[in-house]
Amino acid sequence: MAKLKVGILVSGRGSNMAALIDAAAAADYPAEIACVVSNVADARGVTTARTAGIETAVIPHGGFPDRETFDRAVSGVLERHGVGLVVLAGFMRIFSPWFPQHWAGRIVNIHPSLLPAFKGTHVQQQALDAGVRLSGCTVHFVIPDLDSGPIIAQAAVPVLAGDTADTLAARILRQEHRLYPLVVRWFAEGRIRQDGGRVAVDGAAATLLFSAEP
Ligand code: GRF
Image 1 (cartoon, rainbow, N blue to C red):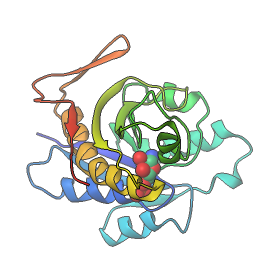
Image 2: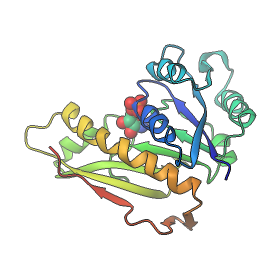
Image 3: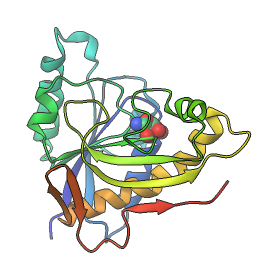
């Protein structure tokens, strides 16, 4: 069966992108990384993707008169590569409403908190400030409202005494690297169903991962 073509959008480090590239290297993985698009020319993720032999496109947002024109340019690249799923992996650019509407049901994001808690940026610090004992990451469909789309899966980790935003971020990131390839696999296998605002995954043992690792 033909593999699902995935387009990944990055702005920075690209460790989630790298986890997906690694997963897709397995012969039995049902998705392939068709292209990586970045709005930041010197993003580390772009170098990593090129080194892995993935097609990359750099589209600096500064050259566009407005958000939607930029979004349409990005979309054009994804469509030329036959992308069936857009994966946001640390893409630090707010879309015009047009982009998530155009890709509705075919665009996912990973966010380093247990949504709907702690949206936006500096979320690990937000979690520490709130004193929660549990945090984690969320993979969700993308809608025009930031960090608000239907939740597909989450991974939970403890918040430990003595944690800083950095130690908590590192603990969560390890789970991001497990969760994102799993969700992309489910999507490629056609197992994710949206029912109103709720998402069901056919045949998945769990859509919540736990890790007690410090
Ligand atoms: C991750 O923490 C992800 O959850 C958030 O941005 C960060 C990207 O990290 N959306 P990386 O570029 O994948 O290493």
